[in-house]
Length: 513
Image 1 (cartoon, one colour):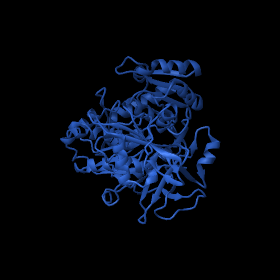
Image 2: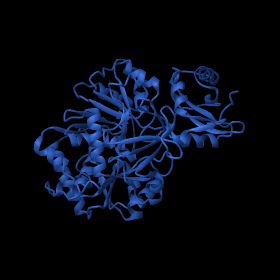
Image 3: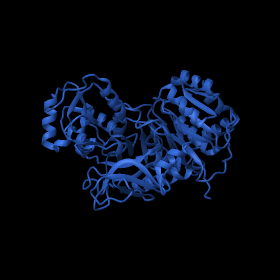
Image 4: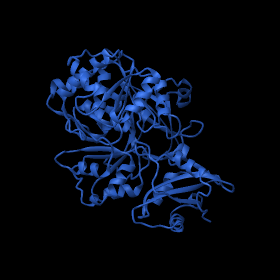
């Protein structure tokens, strides 16, 4: 069995004064010597609270470098780190806490009431985290020893339980082992050329696999650095990206955050030429968005990944990004990927099927969910639930979520294809398409549209545009203009809420004949 080694202790010995973390909100800057010491203290503090190897330590807080400290304190102690989605309601958080039974819950001051309810109901020890020294966390660190013994563990041991976003159902706790994280780090470091000189901007929530791992955790392995933003703000993040002195080299996000930044007036003048990598994932990226950044000399690389894959399973090389526009790229170094039909047979190039993946970065399964594990894995292959196709060169294309596909008149319709066409209209800020019931066709498309400020657009104009660019069965039959889309904390549009809105509205939209 391969042992786990102490990442931070290594960098503290070799590059102690190198910057590790920068907290944009608190302005705290940590070099590797200080970060390692604080994580040692954190491990000793958790141990004093009764946390043993294998116990769960949860955190409920907005992004901060403290969360990353807790993650690595758990690594040192052999505990399991559980970042919680702060956008969930109390009953949802309670269900997660009942599932994983954390020994300790660290919480930000904004979530004191919620944490109190959880602590009282489930007997969880609560640790307050606030800026400055007046918090349980900082007092605990100050009283703890700066030296800690690294608990022996192997790469088969779980380091993190990451609960899925729940956009397609109740959250499930994906167990991510030390080996999963390490091999995902190796995959991404090789593909994106991460080094000790790399610096990422972390804008996604740290309870999201794209926020915690891409690329903050991976750069802690490489000896690089991360700038952590408390919550995503388009103007703030664009300023940080354009700040050459700060020196961001890489950023990962979902399409929405890059869309919002591109719609700012400052985007036209922002100099982003110093960025080495801009990566997007989590949802198909509209081609118009890719073109908007390409016009500024910035190539957005696309990739496919999930919580269960500990980030990226495929990624598009910078060398082929122009030739394979819209592709999610080739499999990662340590990953095998297939596109299969409903019987699990490989489909020919160009045909759409479900994406399956296996490799050392793939989660071994969900916490306390043996029945779902049996459904999610087939002969070692993880069934992603994503609809995809592969071309003759072996490049993969994520068509849509398999469950978002609908059938209209016997034809498969993938909403992402329609959304790409809608984004060609300059008046549209956001668009999302769902399938809804129809007496004649079984299902038809319903397009939800958010307009840019000051813009007007008629439903008939949208349909005319779709007729010119799509087959007849793909043209939405309903158009609904809304003021805003429902997003989860990672920035993904929550289509289940759009379906609920449609079903709850007596006259959701005029039919387009």
